[in-house]
Length: 574
Image (tube, rainbow, N blue to C red):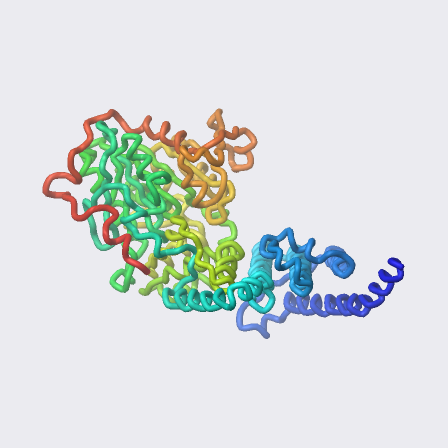
């Protein structure tokens, strides 16, 4: 009897199976045609590509075979492995289970087709990214008509979840971005960015913060932190228990931090040279003057995070060209100096894109912070976009308070000319790492002329600064270097306080720095816990002797406390 039922089911499925095969062949013809479209028929230059015939044949066979199995087996069980379809409501609704299972099958097949493309690596990466974006957006979980879990909640709440979802949507439209956390739970200066300090200098580009010592004595050489200007500095000072700034203060360092101004139209004409000369170099000079390190031979310790590290290194190279070596040490956290390996971000960069940006804003204008934030979010669309669309709007939920996601939503603008210079000369043409290829602030740049010892940190799963790109700085800088790799990504890998006893880091005991990160890793040893303690031990060897901690901020009449930290610049919203 069971065999007869199975035979009947297979007979019913046969026309569908034939339709699947025909649909596959038509879709393939369309893809092949796209890769061979005559350039004259397109308004822009199309990449050339074709497909691996054996791989496509295997994909077709596998697709029809898996579709047949879906017809025969428990579809809910097949979809349950994906957290978007893990709720009981998906399994108890046959239509929803079928849509989820078919969606996952189509997703696997489309991604397989992207892998079957034969073409240059950049074209293949762009096709993969486009397919990933499309399949992420088309998931049945993203739409109320197909989301069994959201439908169940609407019934249970008698429509209240839908009403709340609409309220959430209207609120997000009004504020201009998708809510990833309960933003009402945070306020800069009240429960994030709370380490005690004061603004001791400001100009049109930045405020310089000095933090109150927490030890009776401090090291004579201060520590200046240059955070990224595409985000706000308080990622380094979220809460007391995960603040790198507070940790450095607790270790006995006199800490100064650049707090970038969130650009408005008054800064729309500022350039990369302005950010180097009027911000980074000025911050170095002011820190030296306040701490008495401006005398001959006086030096400070410096730290740059992400693009802040790129800015810091460029500033030190400018000063080196002028015969100055103000840094006793340099720490670079997830920083690119050699832009050969930029990971997924490379798919956006080519001559046409750079020229378009230059036409838009090379002579003035602003790159909106919302555009930068959206770009980074869509690098992980399921986690940072559609997850919140479903929760906020379809289920009517308020995301829980999370300081890191609050910071992530606090966007910053960039001056157009500064952004265009950075885009062309680093990501596109990769000139910064080549001695003499660039002139900044009137000086030919050679990063190899920076004489300070360097601590270079990279995160293993970083999708913004790939670990290979972070490691490449070891081959560019000429001073004594130490490289450390941490677990996790761009932010979680960096913000990893020792007290949490989370994750791990890798160090190579022999200190060798071969050409590639893979070679380095083959001789490295994993250590449990945070890399912060290793960095702290290293930094103390470059901090000089200990002296009594200062009793007041700034120095004399020249540099007095202007306002309490975190200052007003960081509070300006994009």
